[in-house]
Length: 484
Image (cartoon, rainbow, N blue to C red; front, top):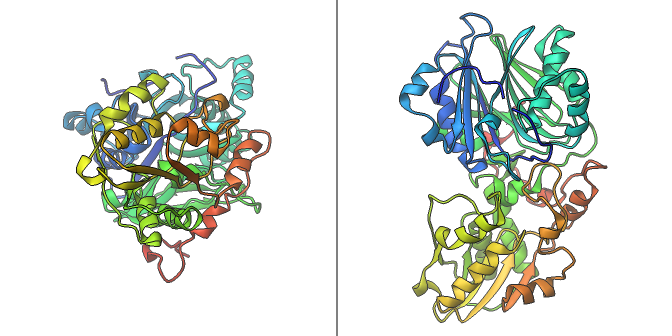
């Protein structure tokens, strides 16, 4: 791996992403590479295929950017010696996984562009629904694409708009009027750190502060990791610009219409210790389990969760039903998520490597197994068989989200509707196919189905189920309330 400015290689418009972004501007002039490194470690669950860091010195030569990126995990891609070479008091970082190919070093972010107005470093989480059209327009205008990711389309449009804009943030605002879809952006110019979120607020982005440094991050857990204080979430459609003078907010693109936060952030993607748009991820999963117990009760001896995102829902089910909560699975923490493996064969082969059943916890017992979702059905089918092989007397499966009926156009790893187990099947048909004694799904959030079906022609409306889990004034953590 080298430390230089990377420009990225040609293309395929089918790529979708679910990533993590992080940015820091230290007004005291301290190097920020190590801070970004630890922030990316906290966001590692959002992407394990590649990562990168780009930094600049606001007091040094204008436009000089040092970047380093590579395939693999954050702790594999960076050594202390490499971080030491990344000198700069402003910087951005990124972790990524590809959903349908394109897992190459050239597609790693942040993207760094040299153009007539200077340099631009960009980290993007999300997926554009009009990227093919925008890419074609740029190509006919002479643009030469060097990656397979729609993030480069965003970077090109910002760079082009910057030529006829007075400020970098104005260029970002103009570019946002052209792009459609899901995006949370962290952008570094020579003297500014900017964050932007799409008007629907599909992907999360928050602001933090540590001493005399400001931070932008996909999740609040990254702020906790570096010891930063949560300031607030970036509003859907908002552009925040961080300079030596402080934070400036541009809300002209904020819409009065309902927003559409991605429900999968709460179900699966986000870490349970994160708070997104005022909603605790842990609390939302706990309440999903409670509602599931009220909706789909059953007599059993133990309630267990499928690690990790099913554990909180299982605890909620236990608390509501009074059935003891237990641990039935030992997870190999060194194996990546099966849901985000690009190939189906990879998902299937990794289940047993990832999980092992505690026989003494389930043998001879009636087990309620809680999972956060069923997407393809590959994982749940094998886990149920593992419980039966371990001697479980009965296996009652409960799922804390509704049937996943439609593909996602905004970055979730669901490439084709035909691969969804709920496609053209009833819950009873899924039960028979999964060979489970009893299977039910929660019905609290049926709007999710309509949301996904309406895309991409109509941008989704609010996922109303989240409102049921909104943290009340009496039990919310004050440090995660928006500061006025």
